Amino acid sequence: MFIDSHAHLEGKRFDADRDEVLIRAKAAGVTTYLAIGNGDGPDTADCGIRLAEQYNGRPEYPEIWASVGIHPHEARLANEAAYAQLAAWARHPRIVAWGEIGLDYFYDHSPREVQKEVFRRQMELAKAARLPIIIHCRPSDNSDNAWDDCLSLITENWAPTGSHGILHCFTGSVEHARRALDLGFLISFAGNITFPKAQNIRDAAQMVPLDRMLIETDSPYLAPIPHRGQRNEPAFVIETARQIAALQGMPPEAIGEQTSENFRRIFKLIGNGPSPTVPQNVI
Image 1: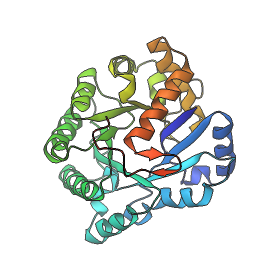
Image 2: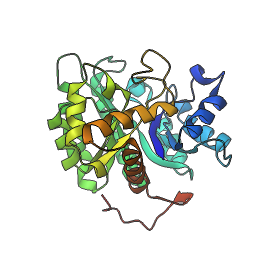
Image 3: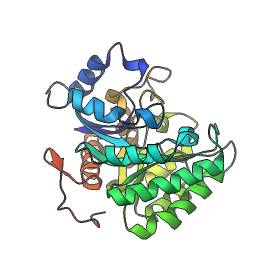
Image 4: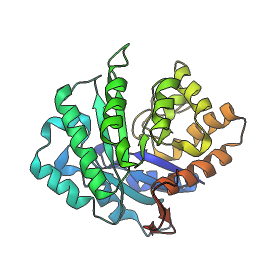
């Protein structure tokens, strides 16, 4: 059993064969995936909800949970109306997380100070909604600038809440991973862990405890070897599990079982729905 903890299947790249993509995932052993709710900006951040409503309850497809949030690329589009709409969507029964949110200094599609302010505001909203946060962090070339700012903002604005979160598609150093673990976060690894030049990611994956780890595809991006260069899809999350299994000296199925348990724990999922009875300090 495997869970893809982060995928974007709402876009045009899946319009022609989304059903088949989900059927392939289920056939490959992917029982669940988290539909990330960023869309093309605040107005379409309910995209994960819509996918969950369309596909859940059909046994040929994985179960779908969803998140909601404003990506740092679209931080410039945030306003009070957008925040109010996000807060309303966050009450949907399929929403289990707020994200992905954070900082992206590689593309700088939104001014950095705007990204920081929108990140802070969304941490406040996630706290009010009692949802864990999913973090996107990408620094500019040859720099730790976004990591330093992101982890500092989490320390100042999120750690005091005692709540948890996920560093998605981790690309940092072992030290960044350690700092995130100290803040109560889980670390999620994607298909780029298989890339030849990604030794820093593999080093982090060897250090992160298995009970603090998730796996993801970040579909349609970052297809793992042997699918590199193709459109990524949830069925390929098994290749990420296989790489981590090789690093840990374990079978891929064991990685799948443990990361699935971690997913259910951080999102407080029991059976077919969120459980309000699981204590906040389960991690």
